[in-house]
Amino acid sequence: MINISKAWYHERAARVRSRSGSDCVHLPRTIACITHPTETEIKIRVASLAATAALLERNGFKIRTPRHFEVNLVLDTPDNSLRARGQLLRLRSAGDRTVVTFKGAATIGRHKSREEVEYEAGDFSAALSVFERLGYVARFRYEKHRTEYQRLGDPGHIALDETPIGNYMEVEGPPEWIDSTARKLGFFEADYLTVSYGRLYLAWCAERGIEPTHMTIDPPTA
Image 1 (tube, rainbow, N blue to C red):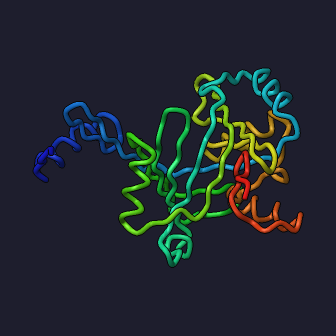
Image 2 (cartoon, rainbow, N blue to C red):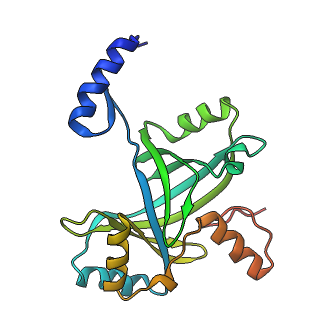
């Protein structure tokens, strides 16, 4: 067990924060980092992944993270207190990474902006067990294949998502960059979506008269 005094923690965090802009504490064989950015993004539904990937490449985007499978669990208290406040707690398995994310209440305009606090955990199952023992339960599971793109020098990035309810391009970065990039790619404000995959899934189920469960690539059989 590692015993850290509060004074040591804050002194160490202050020194690292002054260099990196985030709260990072370096422990023996461990690096724990917490970032506090504001996430601003939109989604755009796309018909063809291959055509969209080619469009990105023609505009100078290169693959930042190759195609990988993601499992996302949205966690909440039994009385859905986080959802009632417009907040989100998510546990994600993406390739060999496990990421814990908290998102604050969203501001919806042309884009969706919200506080995002995120860190990497060592093990998905262990992280889930910790939250379950704290009283959180998995409310919604959604899966997708994702490929991430970025252009050299750009302040934002683009993800192509293959989901059970269609293909989407997620554009994340400063608002002005989102708009200018979308226009260069041939998309306009009318194409923007600012809802979550959970709400997109509920709308997809309602259109088809399907009882919502989870948005999985291979739905479990009874």
